[in-house]
Image 1 (cartoon, one colour):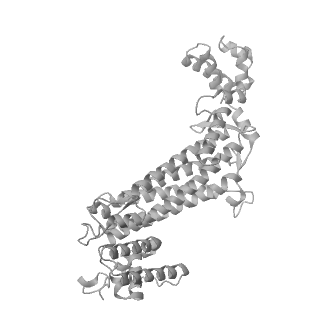
Image 2 (cartoon, rainbow, N blue to C red):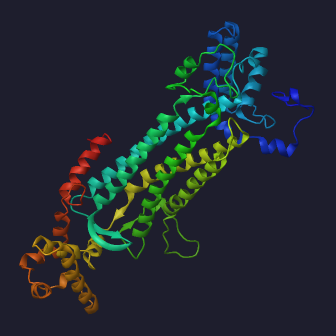
Image 3 (tube, rainbow, N blue to C red):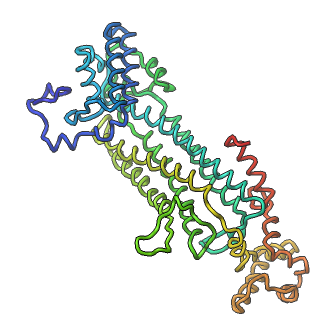
Length: 462
């Protein structure tokens, strides 16, 4: 039996497996709201240019209203034999109002229809993500402010080796900056995708006297797309969104990884809230940071979506090809993954219990203040490279003797180099080291406090 929507050319219906393989209803039904909105606008445009009568428009709009109500209450008769959301809605409209429903597809193809729906869907999804990003950024700013006084100090790391002490507030603000750039990327991508493909039809435009500027304006687009081939055959807007989501998830993964490390017994800097941890089926003592581990893992899922769609479009000739049906599943999954990760972090971060004494002790131990001594000699006029070697030899001696920097006496410092004076001893205190990092963007309390105030204004907390 020929397919009722496009089967005039065919003598028999598709093979059952081929039909299932071809179908997209399982995932593109998520676009039903956008499709109804587009249908209403398209219908009003058709009536305005004389392609529908007022009676036909009234019937179509009433039918679409009934379809929306059926979907909302769960009584809509989704049909698996109709391959996508567009054909399901059109078929139901024709059942409800008869022949006028068959006129709705005038001057339109599923090619420009799905491209329009997807842009509308992404625009709304990105608005939701931007709101969630704002909330997580606010959480980061609040946590930074909360841990400024008394100072929470932890070791800063390079190569995962203790490097120099930093304020915990400074650490929070580092992720605030990353997520701020993530929001900027999403806003940029949203601005570029906000053009309307509707009216491009299959690929070449249409001979009907349509008004693409009207439909673009009614759907909230900035303008109609200027080339019909590009309108239906391009998915770079989806790739750009996925690129932004990928970078955003990488940042969330890095945050999760640090919290996982810091919550181990070996670090012991922080405890994850019970609500976001799990236990072991065999080891009663375990408290596993599973939610953070999953956020870390799901970054790979979003990267996979980006790589997958990139592979789909890399060799496609113009214009539309069925390959482009593969855009929605990974894109919808990536959006949901990033959305849920943001929601979880917004709830998890305020519940972290930071162990100030443990962090302070870790920052104080070892040789994280060695740079202070090298800088001291450089300030006294010794070339920094030579100062570096002087302090390096001191560190080597202490390592061999099993001692730490704060064990050094003034005599030992002067033995290492005569430029050391009594005021060098204060450099072996964390408070001194932290306060000396006053350069713009540094970890000194006054610098971090100033940045917290700026950030509060940026996210509307001031």
